[in-house]
Length: 293
Image 1: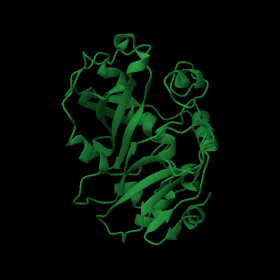
Image 2: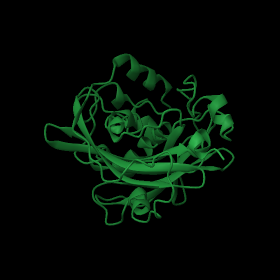
Image 3: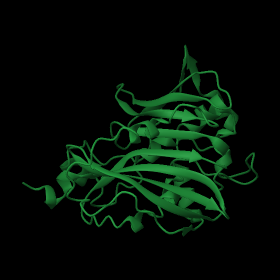
């Protein structure tokens, strides 16, 4: 899909931009024991195996290019907090405030299922707006840690060594692109920056490289994405370039149904910080014997 056609598909209704309905695929449905597996997810109270929240983020770039221009891939942010899970084939569409964009602007964004259930909410911005992003605001107002059993040994403040991030396997990239609801021509051909760039949702796997170094030791516990923010610092993220990545564990806590961590990871290109991800990972208490009563 060329970028002009994708941007043209965004409607303006009053002061709201509305994207087209899409039906994202659950690409990990065969991963037994994960939240994407029907049997596992249903055992935890979900309707079925869930679509990863990062997949939903992939629908927003045409809207963000309309708001902020192609420079969104250079200094733009998408900050999303996931409210409700979706299943394979659920129809969803993105929304954003139709605010007047400038070089340091931030708008509210959200996504709804076709029955008006809100899937995610957050902010998107470009440049360096004065207001904090949606996830920065949540991080600044976290409750006390509470009781953690799954993550009892995990301490906030841990930083990791720098890890090489390999270039993505071309066959895997093609599988992702085939399933992507908004497959822009910039993702597998020429772009304003020369070669192809990576969709922010598809880049999440690169940012997760430091995660094993946090020593979470959660074997058998089912996890899922709670929130993701991608922040371009000196972007874009180029598909065919190798990067290094480092991580910092920001916070640990719990809710009635889950324990969670917040962490931040940074992609680096020969001393230049290119982009950051802030991630909230949830671990379902009902999947752990440590919470059996």
